[in-house]
Image 1 (cartoon, helix red, strand yellow):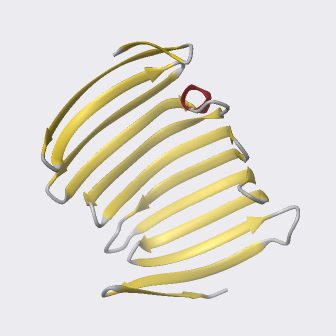
Image 2 (image 1 turned 90 degrees about the vertical axis):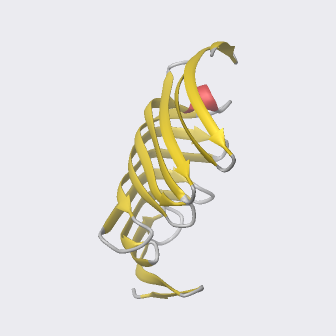
Length: 178
């Protein structure tokens, strides 16, 4: 793949094999100053997908966007119960009415079992309301989740709460503790 897109250099290569609903492949894509590498496999219900942003400049991808995202994402497990591992850092992110001076997402969160520890920290966010700081800490697993959230807004009071959520059969139950 080569050429120009919206005045930016475009180059890349990939290899994909699809067999019905199963497939595997890899991609190395460069657009402007951005580079994205991805590889993955979906076999039956199992998945193993990984992406590296080295970095991704939003203005290369989104007209009117700005800022950069560095890091990696990895999803494993099944289509209905994916496990997430993330190490992403965003800086100076702006697109339309949404913005964040910093956003960091680090850790892992399995769908089942336990042992997950995923933290999202953001500063100077505009996500419909302005937020000076957001800190979200998820522990356990998606089906048995403990969550702590702290958000500070210059226009409203700060918010701090903790809670939990569990899947029981086909239904979900949760509570707010603080």
